[in-house]
Length: 303
Image (cartoon, rainbow, N blue to C red; front, top):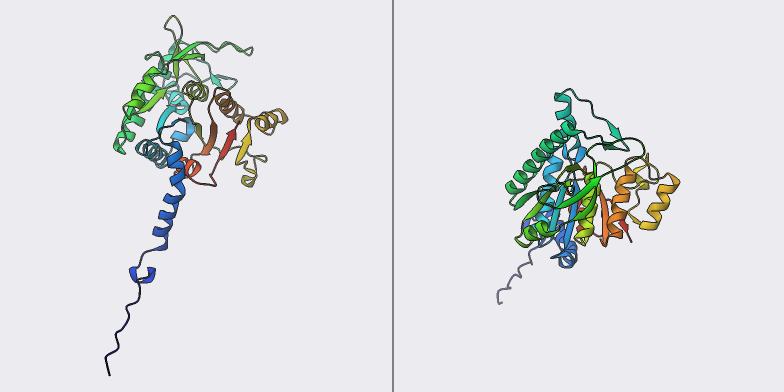
């Protein structure tokens, strides 16, 4: 009798010993593909600063996401704050911070400390981006004629050298983006006479996003997003229209520090930005999860 040939079994995951999590990584990349195609060549303005900068691991994850955007053909613009660093410098000099409407009262000596602190943060972020394989260049908002400003007036008192944005010169940013670099912007502006003004970073980033007609404006912050019940994370609103967001402010559902963040998103939308997002810095790689997955992880505010 002729010998019977044994059929070889097709290799399976069990034979190849490929962990399921490796296959899941491929699935994630495939889920991201349509987003990568849609956003290639588009500009994202990302505001990142304040207490969200404090944790080195969280900061590294956010900067890795931004470098990923750049390598993938998206044009990220990073605007940062640095409130805790400013407060540390003030404490060393024996000067107590004072705030009006959440804005730091900035006299001449405080302005110098603001400049020094923000320059230090800027250089640190640029160094980390370069270590991660990205190209980055700092832009000082007042030195490069990037942000034009005038003194901000509020009825509660004199803010000193605190400004509001009156104009944006996008030229320096566009030149860096054309070279494939990531602009890292210090949110300080200059008046017509050259006087520097301290500008709220959310406001500065929102104005830049509008001037650049960005595809997206993203606030990386230390809150999950907009909650209808601040004590219940399950009350997170994943998508909110501009109209509903304004209604939630009026009702007091959005309150405190969430009001300026929400208004920054609304101002960006009214300036021509297509979508805005708030994401929690505590979620590793939250930028990628919010932008490149179907579900997202924060709050999206849309027109």
